[in-house]
View 1 (cartoon, rainbow, N blue to C red):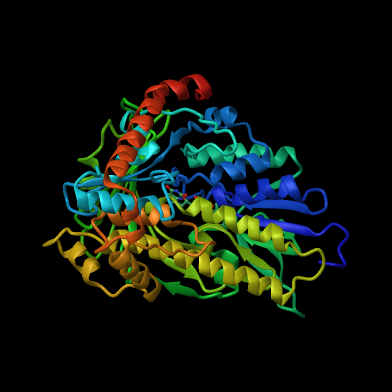
View 2 (view 1 turned 90 degrees about the vertical axis):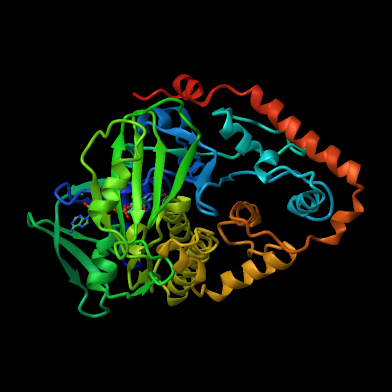
Length: 500
Ligand code: FAD
């Protein structure tokens, strides 16, 4: 890139990944770099992807996006967590909420005291000590600011939004800041005869778009990274067996809940995502176990409102591209790999891909060290997310159901086995600091699915029983009081960021 005065970055694809990348480049790299985005209206975008995790707010705020404007432009609602229904035993449910689980009580984590209380018969289900879970139960939401050093838990939150509207919103942002959009279908790719780099993409209408660095955001097909550069694919379907999703929006019903629902089904699970203008629904399933027709019928039989479109099936393969940066091509989004949306991680992975790219953006030549660093970190991140998703399937007690029986009894990746064994024995969770899901997430899912440690940390015994009882009761009471002062989620959204 050194010889070119204004290095040229070409983003291939205009779905969520393409426009998030282009918007970030517009904010941080234009005019030092020129940025062109190529997308094809004829091919379109995958168009699902409506639930996020709190890190999305970091992305929006890095771009300087106003939250109320964003809500209004994308039909967004707030999200405080995910309810998992029937993932442990068929009639049980729990919430994986964002934010703190319990509160600091002593030397060991809160859940160790909770486990002791459970043994004494004084602990209620874990969610009674989680502010978000209590807010979810009452459909409440507020922006809660805490002064520095406050003992009270912070209140992180995420959004549900319309993915197509978000892409449109970011397109406006990027184009205003100098990104050039080129409409057209790419029909061939030109390579540099000397070093094998991609030098240009050629469109059906004869246009040639040349670049120095290409970001492949072309979706599942991986136009550059796979079809041209053959990066290879690591298949994870032995653990994550779902390979299809059927999606259908339905009319919105009250109340507007600040959570995503994930409901276990015979051979997969159903999502329910509330937006301002509709509810997004989908059924993720294993085609080895049920047909598309059966999956569609199960979905349509379980909608809250009237369907607003015909159901649409999306086929996918779970796994990751062996290399996400090859030569002068970096894959971001579905082109880099896919893990089903059980914990709403794909948009987050787009974001971290963009962050890594910005950190390593070549001022001159792309070095092997930069590529290696990018590839290693992408692989680590996706593998750890994969293990967390496998946990949900593996720790089920849906006995007598073939799909679930197979997943409960399968061999899981070594690292996951270690985490589960350690928790089962002494209640310790040990994700490394750079994993996406920290111990609060692991604890909520494991306890929620009845992975209960055989013993707790004896340090928790140092707290006298009356003091523990008082603490647990006081914590729940203070959360309930705080939530009672929050407005209804639907009313909050209608006031703060009603849809345009
Ligand atoms: P796409 O949306 O497929 O975009 C590809 C782009 O490339 C399009 O613009 C297309 O026109 C262009 N293109 C392709 N080929 C060519 C060509 N030859 N010439 C020109 N242009 C071309 N993520 C979450 O975070 N939360 C969720 O709840 C969630 N739910 C999901 C549910 C399902 C069933 C699926 C499949 C995914 C879900 N995701 C979710 C993931 C999320 O949808 C994607 O991460 C996100 O939309 C990114 O897609 P993309 O931009 O990589 O690809």
